Amino acid sequence: MLRTAAGSTVGRLVIQPARHLGMRTINVVRRRDAVEEIKALGGDEVICTEDEDLVQRVTEIAGPVGVRKAIACVAGPVGAQVSQALAPGGAGVVYGALSTHRQTDPAALTIPLQARAKPLLVFEDGRDKDDE
Image 1 (cartoon, rainbow, N blue to C red):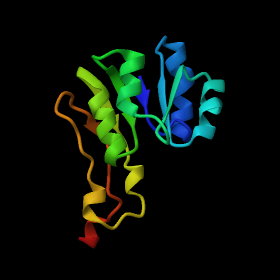
Image 2: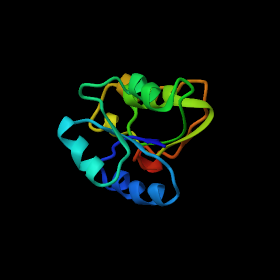
Image 3: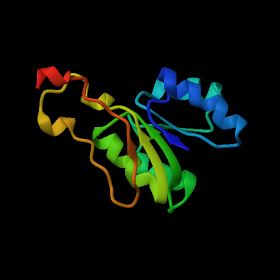
Image 4: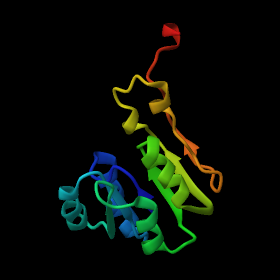
């Protein structure tokens, strides 16, 4: 299972149940100093987007077909790379868009998704219906 924001609260909470269920985790972090911490918590593999290509590393770890499951809360380029890393027929859950935090450019608010998989989007923009 591939997951972004591995150092977040939700990211950390996924490690133990996944391990209990026999699922290997590929954990994505932004900073190199977070890698050892995630490994110490039981993460099987850790990819640091600061200095590693996410799609290339997933291919090295999971093979050219990709991963069957992904949990993501980062949109933008990292979100696009997660959808690229999904195997055909794989499932992804996108529950947030951290990369859009404090963005004002409409282009930065997009979540580009590749066509080889159909992620489930669980996302709300935070605006009240009355504000529209």
